[in-house]
Image 1 (cartoon, rainbow over the protein chains, first blue to last red):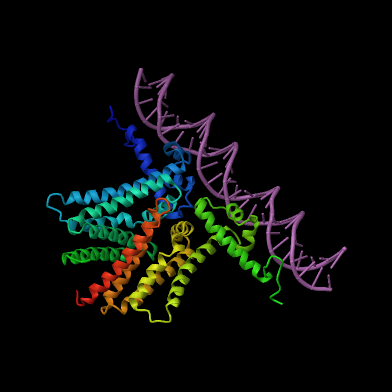
Image 2 (tube, rainbow over the protein chains, first blue to last red):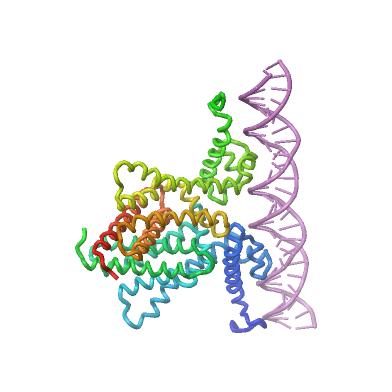
Length: 216
Length: 216
DNA sequence: ACTCGTATTGATTGAACGTTCAATCAATGG
DNA sequence: CCATTGATTGAACGTTCAATCAATACGAGT
């Protein structure tokens, strides 16, 4: 019944999901190639190998498919950390290891791709004038802070110091990512690797300092 | 001769400069009010109290006036530090003081204004697909790094450690600024003040750590 | 008062874009 | 083998916007 196959190997019920993902991929590709302003219904649908009308059919309009693409990016980031934590579920993950995983997730391959970097920047710029996107942005920003704070609390006794450590680390991750993205000369991962290294070094210095306990 | 006054108090030769600045101000105001996408020739010229044609006359087109507005922002940032250093020229400015000045400049009032924050984000997003803007971005990004490195070199003996300190501080400044801007709920300066505090605390911790000298 | 030159206007144009919807067609069900 | 579904198309439409340019306003010089 639901398992009946079409000749192209697609289940009828799956077509919608498949098309939506194809259009989201095409949207990210278009933003990568032509920029946010240069992305139109035509560039997206052409990259997807479909007609222009299909976008309104599945997403209600251009605004819809772009919002969906952003949600996809946010979801990738969220799942990235979940998967990595899951991978180390057998053994016990120390607070320090967990912090390193958070850093690695934020500098993972997908987050370095052109389509992702360009879209993130456009997303932030648009979030300042679009309440729906602003809400998504805030949730995402909060998640990074909370994840960091959770681990820092287990490493730093003083609550205020733990909060400061989390805020600093969040800023350093975002700042490193931003500067790496903007200064990406050709297609070198060098900047991202260095950024990841420095973020991890910073976390270790925070832990080491707090080990010496009593400051301020 | 050149000092001849018009009835409105403007020098003929100055009219062009005055009009250009008025249009740049109007452009920033429009981006603040309507966003980057919502900014058109009409919104700018209306805010400036002039007609739409004037933009093409003075800037050759919309692209021209927007580029000029971005250049103005970059110049403000550059001059901000110069002025502050100049203010303390009489007495000797210690390397640490100079670092704090750099932080203060990046969180100065003008950089917190809506018109500036929105334009910065739009500028970054556009820089990824516009070579002219990308060049401006790189120069600006480099300046922050160089300024920081110059002072850190006087405080940290190991060259590699000084370079890392500068890179980390640059990222923290940009990251703190970004997160403050994006999470600006209503119109609270609270986030910016906290960001400035943490950046300064971070610099002090870098200096203190290097004082203990020999690490790695 | 009159003219010249510059500054400015704003209606108009043409291109670009998002949306709509009647028509098409392959895949299903009977 | 015919009827029905619904996924997909793409031309047409209305809107938006940057750019243009002929017309106008206005100060300066005589």
